[in-house]
Structure formats: C-alpha cells, structure tokens
Length: 304
Image (cartoon, rainbow, N blue to C red; front, side, top):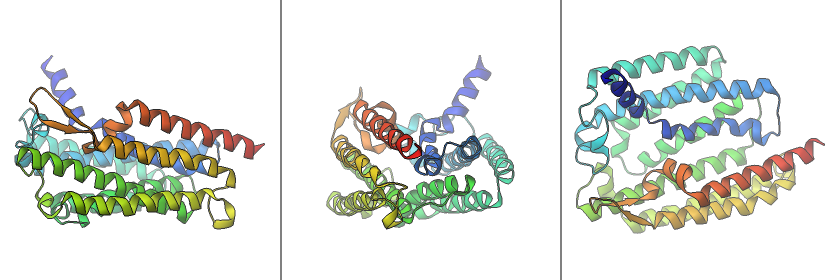
C-alpha cells in the first residue's frame, strides 16, 4: 500500500495534466491534412518523448523551488514540497525520464534530438535563472510551445507554414501572460509573492502585453487560414475555423477574470493553470471540439 502511495505521488509530481501541452506535436500532420499512419506514429513517439522530457524538467523545477512552493497555498501540497518524495529520489527519477526521452528521440531522427536538447537547455535555464527575469520568463515558457510544434513537423517530415508557427508563438505568449496575471492577482490578494519575478509586473502592464499578443495571434492565424496564396493552410476553406479561434480567445479571457473561493477562502484564478481550463471548462472543450471537427471536415473535402 505504501509503495502504491509512493508511486502515485511520483506520478503526480510528473504533472501528467500538463502533458496536454505536448498534443501540439500533432498539429503538423493535422494541418497538413495528411492521415498517413507513419506520420502519426512518428508524431506519437515525439509526443511521448516530450512527455518524458517535460516531466523530467518539472521534477527538477520542484526540487529547486521546494522552499517557495511551501509558501504557496496550493503548491505546498505537492509531493516534493510536502516531503513525501525526497529531493534525491526526485532527481534520480528525473534523470531516468530524460534517458528514456533521448532513447526515443534517437530512434526518430537527429532533428528531434536537437529540438529536445534545445527545449531542455531553455527550460533548465528558466528553472535555474531566467524565471526570475521579467519578460524573459514569459518567452522561455512560450518557446516550449513553439519547439513542440516544430518537432511535430520535423518528426513527420512536413513543411510548416511560418504563419502557423507565428500563431503558435503568439498564442503561447497569450496563455503565459494570462498565467502571470492570475499569479499576480493571487499574490496581491494573499500579500505573498510566490514568484520573485512577479514584483516586476503590474496588472496594467500584463494587460497591455495580453492585448498585443491576443490581437497578433488572431491576425496571424487568419493569415495562415487564408490559404496557399499567403504560404498558409492547404486551402482557404480554413477561414471557416477563424471564428472558433476568436471565440476561444474571448472565452479564455472571460475565464481569467473568474475567481473561485476554496475552503480556505483563498482565490483560485482559473488561468493560473491553463491545463485545468482545457480539461475542465465545458465552454473551452466545446470550442476546441468544434474547431477540430471543422478542420477534419474541411480536410475530407480537400482530399476528395
């Protein structure tokens, strides 16, 4: 029973909820309207590789942040911060996950190994130093999303539109800025700065950043959806998916203003954890489902 409890805590420390971010590697075959099994198999193994490397980084980050996590109203319950898993064992498991990740990557192609390495360097730099640097912290997190999208294209050996990569980058910046806004609001409410970098930000500043990247992501996606004439999507029929993107941005911004009180009367702002919104909010799930359904429907028409 104790062994099962320990394994459960170890798995939760790998943050499986955040593996939803790695689904971005499937975007290349999806938006190329290609349903060849070998492309999707390669993307699947790339997805697994990113799950392992991201979990490896999460474990290292929790070890480095153990003291600050113990001051956070929710993070103090994490296995490493609460002492259920020792730092030594967390690092050992992190190295095992990293080894498995590289074994998978080497069996894909050298480009994936390079992308994984760049991802690892950026994220470790973030954990050690850059998460304390304003603006750079936001770009480090966003870079992870961009590298996932690029890796999906490289594993499937597909050409990715620069407009699409720009859309991914700007949307990632949008989600990261929303996350920082939520964290800042919680810090202001509780009068405890859970991140050192938050002292450099204000709600007004982050709102201005948000307005720029939200508008930019919508425009760049629209340019991609315009079709081949602008080096974008395979067909201009993808413009039919644009309203779902705008609706998703509006819905996310709406949710970022919602504050839920827990049993300790501490505010939990949903956008502090983007993966929770993706997994729990019915509105967002409906928008994503409708968006994917429209893409698949258009791809079937194009193929015919």
